[in-house]
Length: 82
Image (cartoon, rainbow, N blue to C red; front, top):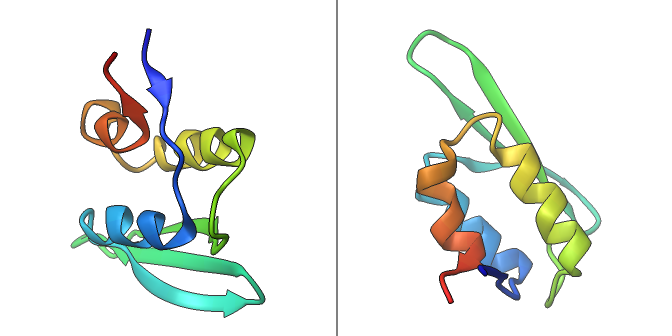
């Protein structure tokens, strides 16, 4: 069964930068990432810049990102295939 990886906020910045997201704004440890599609559609994600994310927080960010990124592309970054 796949296991959720332990990720940090900087890991998430790197992962989502690979999908075209960039840092849009920040308030404390919460960062908004945004990408604009060619049709002008803006897609925004909110992540936290903690050293180690709780499992529930990682799952919530994963589910939020699934609105914009295909599961097949995103899953290898969040889950191990054990």
